[in-house]
Length: 168
Image (tube, rainbow, N blue to C red; front, side, top):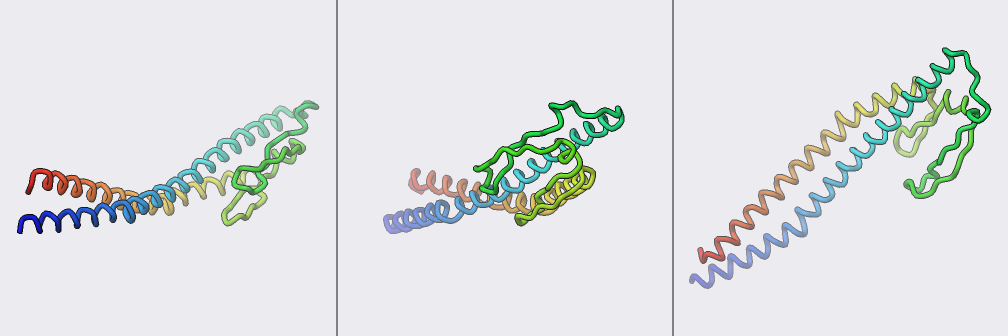
């Protein structure tokens, strides 16, 4: 009878191990991936926000000083993403005045909108707040839940393994 119980427990352990590997771990990886995507978006919007603030300060300083940009500062070079998930870029050269006045901002679903810098700053601030309050909070909660389930399952699995090794 004891041998039958041992075999049954080992079968259950194998089934439980398969569940951990085939269900919980992939679910954990997916939740982590989705959480990281939102965190990356927030990070990119924060970088854009800092760049816009710097550009706005530079533009304000130039206007306040009543200066005309030097000849070498009249053109700005930039690498432009050609929409291949940041793998293909081209070099763009544009007048500094155009770049300092208006920019295109990715607003989601592959749409870009032309904004003045002050409008872009407002949009970016709202977008960061939205991402932090909605998708980030939801993805973090989902990740925490799956992480808790995975950790609990691993603890139970280790306890069962220890019990089997001790011979019940």
